[in-house]
Image (cartoon, rainbow, N blue to C red; front, side):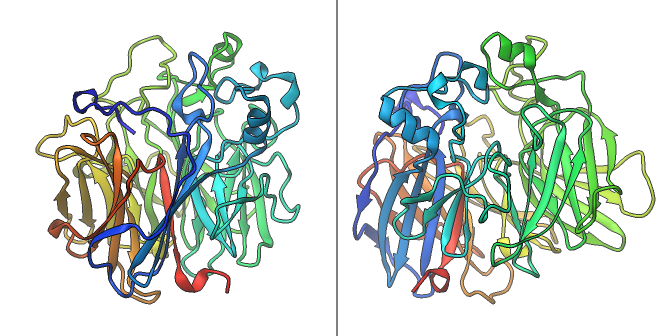
Length: 475
């Protein structure tokens, strides 16, 4: 969440669990919109240590539960092993982002997960995710933590990292996931695996990356799995000095890697390319022997909070994200891949219709600055992009509002792609960050909200979110 001191709205940790029954609704919630809009973000229960970064805040999950035109709101901290230990001690026991050497001896052997990055539904559970750890399992309705370390009934090791961006296969409904540094702290192994609707692991493979890098997101198609490696690399010397896990090492290259899904990983190819950054995938598919991997790309370090290894200051312009299409021929071995910039919109958190995770798709959605005023410090627009026409639609929020990542919700389980609603939260910078949930027609984004759900308080922080349809809840 950006700060905006000119509006009196500098973000500070929220620190409260909230219940609001029957929120005030302006406009009319569509009759066919019923389910739950979940999101999670970092909200440190105890102050972060000097030199630490916001990524290390405790996971705080929120739910807008929509039924019969009414909305109830709830937020809860994820009660991870780390959270519980620190709550009992009433202080921070793991003071530095992914640097276990500084942990208090009392938490040795506990999961370091903050569960603060993403949430997805699995059966009757909500899984809260952080890429360096296993998921935490929560109750879909109450948000109470059921299992702080969820291993799919012991099928994954307790210390198996689990990506914050698993993909739900469009044809099977399986969860395709991975974990990097999978065979011990600082290892160069990525474990790739797939879990079916019933929670059964159906295949897995270990692969090796060219160097130990942050692999935040990936791509899955019907037959392949792909990774993009950026030079945000492990920095042991920085950790020995008491710093965080990563630094941006511009001396390293980026790599596009791909392998067969359901294989053993021996066909993996890494193709070297120029040093580029970017963390999030929009979509991926394969067509006529080629793999298309759409993601946001930066020319340099995308994170102001991650140090540059050479000591240079962060370059905001070079770290700005734009959507690119990476293309590679799946036939034979190759020394290069294609990289095409798709739109002039700044797009660090793009989302698609999640029913199309592994197949050809047309539309994408995002929060972005106004392209006519791109120096804005926060997302001020919701956008829909159309790959078929290479066009976009924008709704511009009031200047005093900062927008979170929007989420596409289909109007029916079988509606056509992009037919449905766009849900997103806005924080009022001139009202102490009081928040509203806005509901837009996803096919007419430029017309603005058809309904607005008013909260009397600030919404808990958000990185990523998920939608659960009414029929997916336990009866």
